[in-house]
Image 1 (cartoon, helix red, strand yellow):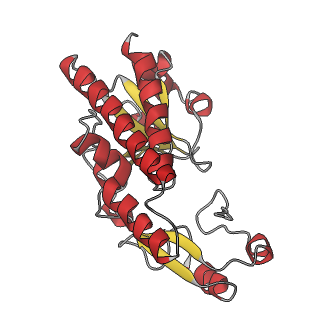
Image 2 (cartoon, one colour; image 1 turned 135 degrees about the vertical axis):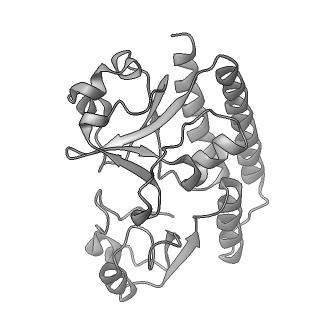
Length: 239
C-alpha cells in the first residue's frame, strides 16, 4: 500500500501520520539540483529517517518512460510482480493514451495552435519549462504537443519555470493553458482575479486544462493522467 503523507507546502510532512503507518520504506523522487529527497528539507529528511528508511528515485534529466522503468525496477526489487496481466494492461493503456496525445499534437500543430503550462501564487505568476519536467518533456519531444518553453527560466531554482509579475502575465500567448493543480498554486478562478491574466484570450475563454504535476510514475496512473489531458485538450480544439 502506498500512502501520501505530505502537505501542500514544500517540506511539509505529517510525521505523526507517517509513524502511525509503521512503514517499511519511504519513497520519493530525487532531483539532481536539490540535496536529499524531493519535497523534504534536509532537516525534515533527518527526522523522517528516524522513523523509516528512505529511498530516492531519480526523476530529473530522464524521460517519462525512463522514470516509469525505474519505479518498475524498484517494484521488482521489493518483490512485486511487474509482469502480471494488470501491469501488461496498464502498459497497453499507457501506449494508447500516448497515441491519443500524439494525434492531438499533430492536429494542433497543423492548426498553428499552442499550449502554455502555468501556475501562480498571490505574489507571482510562473510559466513552466516543459523540458525540465519528465511528463511535459515527453509530451513535447515524443508526442508532439506544442507546449511553449519560457525564454528566461529561473536557473537559480533549477530552471523549472520562469517567474513573472502578474502585470506581465500576458508575456506569452497560447491557445490553451495547462494549470498546475498542486495546492500551493492558484486554481484558475483565483488566477482570473488578476486583470492582465484574465484579459488574455485563452483565459477569457476559459481554455484551461489541468496539469497533474505530481502524478505517480506508473503506466496505469500515467495513462489515466494522459487520457484526462487528452479529454481536456479535445474539448478546446473546437473553440
